[in-house]
Image (cartoon, rainbow over all chains, first blue to last red; front, side):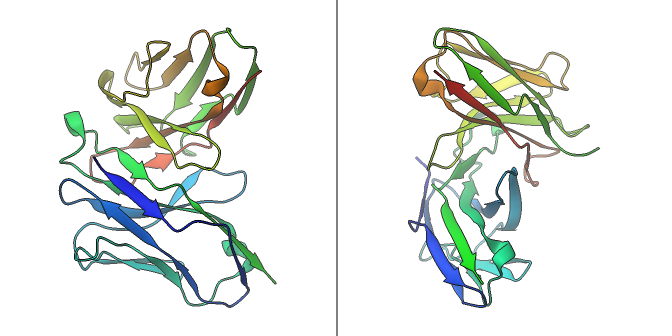
Length: 117
Length: 113
């Protein structure tokens, strides 16, 4: 079946530090890949996505590149801010895996990021 | 439209009681999903509706769980004879088409005591 593995947290960084959160996946077909973010007290929000190999998703200074050869989708940001403190989830949708065309999301366990001034 | 709305935000119930949660998706989103998130884990898929039809159910959805979407708009998730293991955040999401962004509600946090 499909699965997503994220680096364990929590991650604590100083403001303006470089961020990498590793994500690898196992999928039956050719999945779309996503990063979702959950700020304290809020729902999940889509941060960025990539739908095919070598695509780069980007948003709010965050980037991730769909690497089919390494089955990875690592999240990076060059300079984090205190406002980036949140839980980050890597996820995939795999049409080949989702019965009845649900295109359900399979999530990793999440990585909690804390950025200190 | 302000997004996916879930009610209640928090629910505390005694073991053995029944509970029902409601989800109002973004209007005109015909695809609706329920997920469950336990502490320290990512959300796990429970069930999927396309309009009023429930097309897919996860093995996580035991026979104590039932979900409906009677008119293809709002949805309800009922848990009968709650157990402590049902304590979790229940998330609802909707999307207009298959390969588009899924929008999540803020969730209903259930605590079974």
